Image (cartoon, rainbow, N blue to C red; front, side):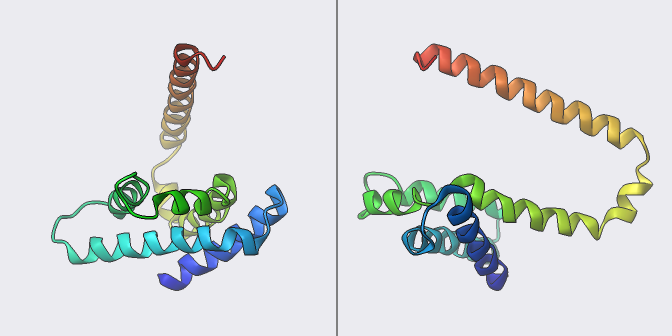
Length: 143
């Protein structure tokens, strides 16, 4: 698992460099912080008897270390700010796509109805998210 996180981190650094022109050396501390938070979050999930998704622990750690009460939070925010989110999402989505491919035969068993349901869910999610973003921007005066 740790090797996977490291490989995704390297791919994200390269994507950050190619797509957003941020040197891998400049983005490396931020990527190391992100990978470390992920590893610690997975470790906590394995240790605690509560069966919650690892993303909850990872998010809580990230929230905690970026609050003003945490020593060095300004530095952490500055360093992780050098890693563009889309550069990080690309290898993660590619990995998810590859893992989905191994379950394709199970997906085929669900039939054509799952395609219709997927389109409705994705469209609804997109439309609601767009409406919420629009309202938020209008309310805060950004647009």
